[in-house]
Image (spheres, rainbow, N blue to C red):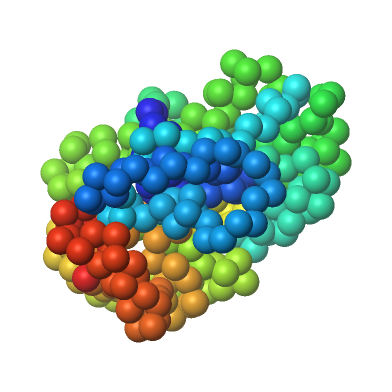
Length: 316
């Protein structure tokens, strides 16, 4: 995977370690931006405490290129942990996974927690040409803890009654992480092999207390309305961010409405980390109030009165 600093700022990128470090917004200390009229606005000082008016860096972070183009930035760096321990874990149900992540967070060492479900694990196994090393009928987690010294004891203490594999060296850890990081590639290969168009991808977040009910309702709605659809869900269990991949011959707008309206009913966000773009613009009202959207339009008109910066993105 590749990323640029400017792109990460424009989209307020998250990722596998959001749980510990937050999104790009949490790393951003200053920006230089070119506005639609050519004006260069620069505030790159990088002071950790600077309360002199509006926070321009945060304004442009996550704006998806609709207000200006980021040309330079000052970002915060964090020390690389000396040691990591990674576990691939099998649990009986999603609720059990939530409980386990809560316990690991209590250690203060948890850096990543990723959840996978049997349909996705099966597709990745097919893609890798291997069998899952754990029970492939169960919910699986990849969890990673960090420390100045080997933090394996944190995992061993909390997983003593679970089926799991543990790794501490980089090569062995990478073998466990494959079962999560290959999901997107495996889904693409699955679609090509079975004649589906590209999967419909949704990047939503719901409050953790709603997640189980949300997943159950999603499954029920898909079975009732689109029974031939293959659904694969995976994602960042620690922050409620789920990546939903639907392989279907149904109209994309029908699937969009089903998933995004369900997300809204559970007080979630229709975009957890990928942004609104053009595809979700007409659904922005599901996550933002009319008053908020009016402020968005005011900002857009102020910074870009002629609508030349990424037109049609974000705002319907």
